[in-house]
Picture (cartoon, rainbow, N blue to C red):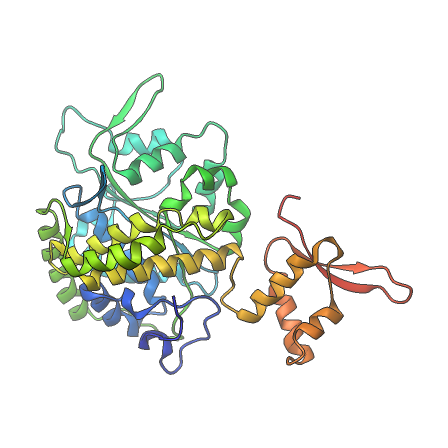
Amino acid sequence: MSQAVLDPMYAGEGRPERPGPTPDPDVFCGFAGEVVRDLDPTTEADPVSVLATFLVAASVMMGRNPYVQIGDDRHPAIIWAMVVGKTNSGRKGASKGTAMRIIAGADPEFSHAPLLTSGLSSGEGLIEDVKDDPDDPNRDKRRLVMELEFASTMARCAREGNSLPAVLRLAWDGEHLGVMTKKKLVATGAHIGIVAHIPPREFRLRLSDRELAGGTYNRFLPIYSHRNALLALPTGARSHVVTAHAETFRERIAFARTCGAVSMSPEAEKLWAEEYYPELSSDGEDGPLAEFTARAAAYCRRLAMVYALLDGSPVVEERHLRAGYALVNYSHASAAYVLGTSTGNPDLDKLMTAVRNAGADGLKKTDVTKLFSHHNRLQRADLIKDLLEFPGFAEDEMKTAGRPAKVLRFAEPGE
């Protein structure tokens, strides 16, 4: 995705410098985009993080009726977002608070338990929360899970024997939930959406190759988040803005809950078949990034469905598909940035590649000078400082006939 075109929300006067990727304006489509634009002036939150949180909540509130049919699989309106941002500048919490103003205004029950919840710890615990109850067959099994310390959840998932990863995969797929224990737990008809918050370093440190390959984390859309405004005295959204959007949101959710299969318009079908599906289904990448974006095609369809339903349409139009595609691309760019395969800074990417290619001998400071001859000494020092924040990169000393020479080396974390 080209970063040449910036949305005015990111290119306006006084916006902080953004170190990572920037979303295509297409992501701010229709009603969802209108909500984010109207909330933006009174919050420091990243608009794309507010959008992602809003879409996850909407997907949960819509329930199990709307779906897209992909082959023999019925994909529910379920979206999971992993908002990744630094503790001091990511403004992850602000994105939740901003989106929740509209969500709670439309349906106050989603502002507290049991519909709004947190504390994922085990598969059994999740099922217990939405298990079948013979005394209450019509209980609401929608759950909006806000995990604001997702590093702890990832640590629990990595423990041997924890059933949470397997149950999460079932939940995203829209399947009935169950584990075989002394007391068999079953939950039919659960509809669970997750917003997870985590700093980039914590994510990289805790990422388990086993869980990545197992398909737990690639059910999340990684969303890079960075503070998008400097507001000394942020006021929050005006009450009349919240009330107006909450009323429309309530109506759109009620409409979505009456829908079944969501189709595509002929124009959207053509765009999907000729451009998007071949690209999103290609095997052009290897390694962790490929695993993390393995569900891009399915996610594009789910996102397009939610965008359409929020516009009050049972049919995905071309603009909705473009929005879903743009958000999937932003997610891909976010994953590349977070995993260290791309930093959003071409010079830093260039230095990373050179250090990796240097192997065990490492890259000498003189090589860095040659590589960036158009930079001054301080600029090169800043690049090296930024590089060393990524896992696996280190600065060592190499013995020479004279003074020891400093070299940059890379080793996979854990080696």
